[in-house]
Length: 271
Ligand SMILES: [Zn+2]
Image 1 (cartoon, helix red, strand yellow):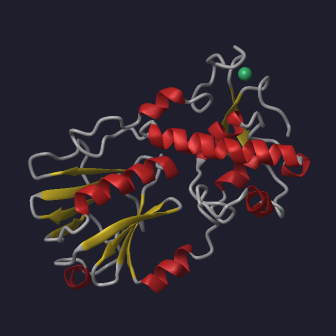
Image 2 (tube, helix red, strand yellow):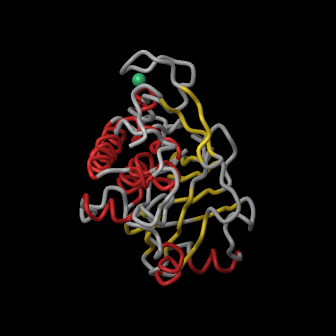
Image 3 (cartoon, helix red, strand yellow):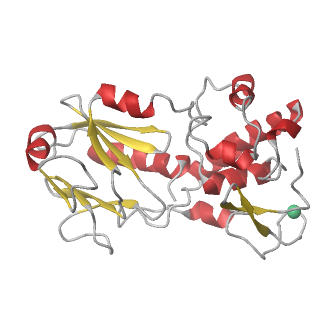
């Protein structure tokens, strides 16, 4: 799963490797993945230079010098790999973007995960998205106000990209644990102090995850270090049956809004 920390790491590494590079070739395994004709690929992609890479919520945007954006969404099992003709990812890639000797591979993509868009089209698709979880303008007051219309479980609201963007199933569990709030806790029960704990926990967990290399399972390049190391720092996610580091009680797997969630029922409370 690629959430804010993993995509932030990708953004930094892709910018390092690709900013200023010219696309010399592109291959897509299916027109379902990138809805563009061969003619559009030749006209709008080939020969274009990548200016920089942006992350918006859980999307990466390659800014091209013709004003177009290649928007990449990475689902549960998808990942990127930067290599060459002789240094390819283990699984077959649905996308190959060729920059001379360097090739960016994307593996595990599904329908519509790649979109070649104008700036206006990007706004049409992402404009309604809530502020980024690490947006500097997202103060505690603005953060709690984003949830004012929500009545359900906090985990579902944290994952709702229209409330705030960048958080998925892994980090919503880890943030709730760090805030000592159950993922199935109901928002109307929250007090001012609950929001303070949740806000602080969100910053702490996401920043530590970025510094720790994120939780991605595949390195971006063959020489990449420090990728996915944060998996060993998970307190609850995917730790069903194991002991809570805080109190020793067994971590449970529960269901919240039809999604799995992990919780220590001793450390985490209703608000
Ligand atoms: Zn505990």
